[in-house]
Image (tube, rainbow, N blue to C red; front, side, top):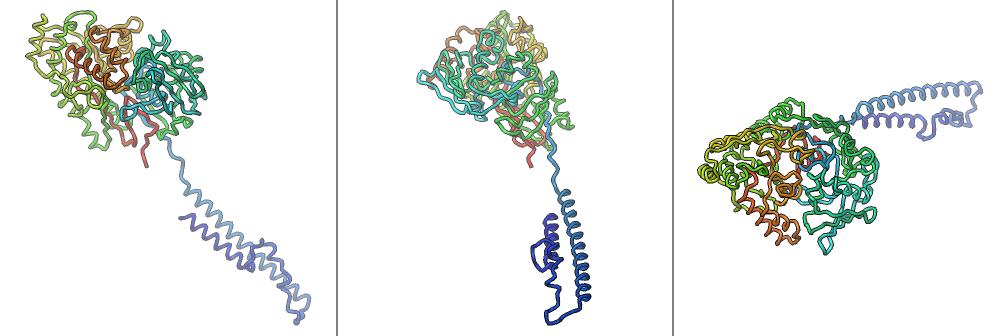
Length: 575
């Protein structure tokens, strides 16, 4: 509005100038020298001196008027320029979001794991051929489409053209082939088994042309598009140059963020406008290691962080009352404690494992410790996952039955056991494990919970890295279905063939194989339900409560977590 007034003032000045000059649009010098208009009529013959004096006087007056008008015009222009300068908006301040995590990713090398906490960060740096959407189905990502041949084992993926990695390397079919060559090599299958075991049936990946990739499997498996969503594609030339260790310290991908810092307790990502996913709404994302849920909540309340992972459910309402946003979503996962049976002992007896499941009141835990946010207590798989059956057996709370089974197995006096746990990763997990131990103590089973670090202990034990192994008789390992959202997923690890198998049920082996090799959905589901019913009767773990995502933040728009993906490229503070 101020600029408009200044423009009106300038137009008015110009109008005065035009009026003083006879309304002509010619430049000022031409209007100050017009002898024809200053001469007297032909009938009146004035003396030469008078005419000259009159002309000079008019020229002086005209010059003075012109100079005054020029000064006024200059002053108005300067005022407009000054006003325009003061009304120009300053560039928007860069937006930094700090996220408090319960555990940090194992490294910047995304093949070293799957699920949380790695994918919370990796999903902002890397992309796969597909990505699991909020509905649990695979969506086109680096590949814009795919199809499967009549043999149900030959797949064709068509890449989006023109995508590059943040270091300038092209994302093409040759890059995809090179990545899978690393993962599917003998060394790769061993080193990256936590990731590669999700699609272990892939035989070969070949670049047909620049944008076409062919994947051939050893058996028909309809879940391939979902499984390879966690096979992130890395720049092959850079990876070959720096090697796995160098890449882990300075990762490079096609996602909307690049890594500026990767440390044990802090990771910093900077927005990359060149990503095919577009310019992110958040300029900088910081992840900080805050293992204690209470410390994360305090950091959020004091403004030290903007997002807190897995705050305790009992503070969710108070956070909401204080103006924070509490985000909750299902994750297709049941919190559980895995039984280690390979060394024998009490847990090798199925009656003992059943007894421990009868001894814990899962419904009471669900209501009291999750505030009812957990949808169910111990039913696997949960609602929304293929294989769900609301009528499948869930062990009810029956301590008398538990004592009976223990006596039948020869443990009437109970026994001692150690459970190694990572704590603070899931909502109220520490409280739930403590409650579990309390219930088990009532039947004479004394559980010592040993907290361990995810990167330093849990993951090496799980993988058997350099001979590392569990020290106790149990550990926390949830029955998670992402990225497949199919009940078969945990059986990639709860099986005899796992690289560091802690549990082996020989009767389940042919059922697992049949599920993984049956393409027809109806036939496959029949076998899947047989496997799940068999597993419920022969529990390899103590099922507790259905797990869920719980986050709190300070008003971010568009924040969400699905299949462990927590992308920030669609997040902002609105306005």
